[in-house]
Image (cartoon, rainbow, N blue to C red):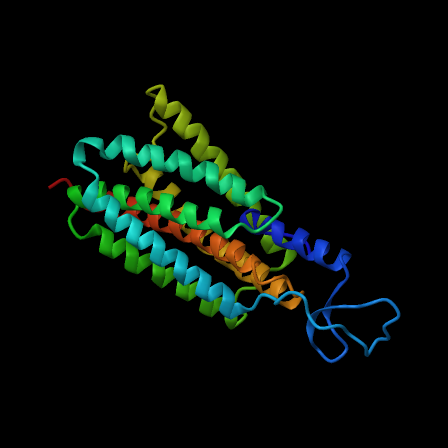
Length: 270
């Protein structure tokens, strides 16, 4: 299985390692993940040594991570004083980025790291949300509703096969994600030196850029759903449900922040 989502890139490699270790993705009667023992025929299989990942596993892990993120966000909102708001959310952003990179490029699924990422990202989301809500009352609830609305819409479209993760689609969305990341990184560096590129100041250019980010973040869910579906089909071990849930969480947080930013552009000057 070739990877298509940078966040879930290790799922395909995990499947290859499991197969190399002697696991058959699908047994002769449809049973997943049964290791063949020496001398076994096509109809002789040993008992499974690992539990394969299922869609339900990914759903449960995703809900757990969202719950942890929500609790962490609420705690940060209440406990962090306004005077430390900027420094705290910047620190959480840096720590979250480091943890995200470690998880993304790790060779093994690590639930502890994924949970730690969810906690740190919750602090980041909570503090950013508090800052925006202090300026525009009610904007956070609007962004939350819109984010989950987009997520469920993309899930329904994927389930109905209205959007398919074709090779061309995968290449296009992946290239767009890499390009946007590069642009945002350059914009951040320039902003540190006092250069305003117009991408985050509420101008028509900023509105257009946020809309592009929202569209790409939404389409990234299709890549995640496709990777998860393929991972289940190939009998990945159950622990990789954490990696899959992590991928969805990353896209959902990105989508939320971009929607929050876009809504702020239309709040007016009062």
